[in-house]
Length: 411
Image (cartoon, rainbow, N blue to C red; front, top):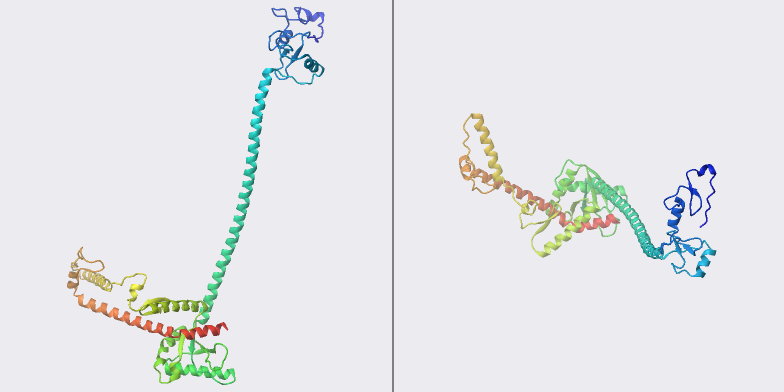
């Protein structure tokens, strides 16, 4: 191994000796070797046999651990040694480093495979993420469309309700008359005048209704031979309309035959006509099944069952208990005014719910009066219910006539 260090000047040689290895003046160790040669000797020792590799020895240096090896110790052929000597850039590795390199290569291969799998999973995740993102965008657009559709539907329903309300308001004072004799005059003004006179005659002379005003009389539908068109009559207020419709049943008992055929009904909107038609279909099915049925207040009512049992409450009001409580309160107030001790008898614990103690009734002397008042109230309720039933039956008898009105209005 050559010494490439420069020679020291005489002034720098003081206290220093010449190294036996490199012949350079320096501070020597106990072996008379400088620190540089000592380190080079350590690095120049053969990694296999431990003997120093000199310049005259065929030595090769490991590319990785930087240790020198005798060519013979490493079983490097002469041809290979010459090739390494001629081409210093060619790498050479010892057995130890070669085994480490093989292990490292296996680990690198494993890591490479893991990286490949991670990249594959990452691509799958990106693809799934893109799919989820697309689905989210589609769902967002779908919900926006659904919200817009729902808003449009709500707006349409609102407009429909407003139109229905306006239509009801326009028809509020209208009533429809069927089978009213139609005028044969050619002029429209004369026909309207004659129809108005006939309606006034029916209302005043036949139905005995006074103090009203007819605002409009119109024939519905196109004129056809042999067919009497329905007549729409508009009066001044709704109360007059219902008074006329409720008295329309009086025409059934009239002496004139043409008056018996005249029917009356309110002017219904298309929605009310559809609902009325649906209820009539249900009523026909109920009647075919047996029993007495009718339409009352938009519901199908069984006439063989008390009305209060068919309501949402399902129980009859206890007028008896209400009256007893009122009398007790009145009695307590009179006791306070006259400064008398309160002699009210408390109801027993075993009394039936909804009824007071019979001893209290006997003390107050109200048993007979309460029963009479209860019977009177029930009688009045039954009479009012019968009147409503008759009005509903009159409306049901005009079913076919109302269907003709629907056809005429459709035309």
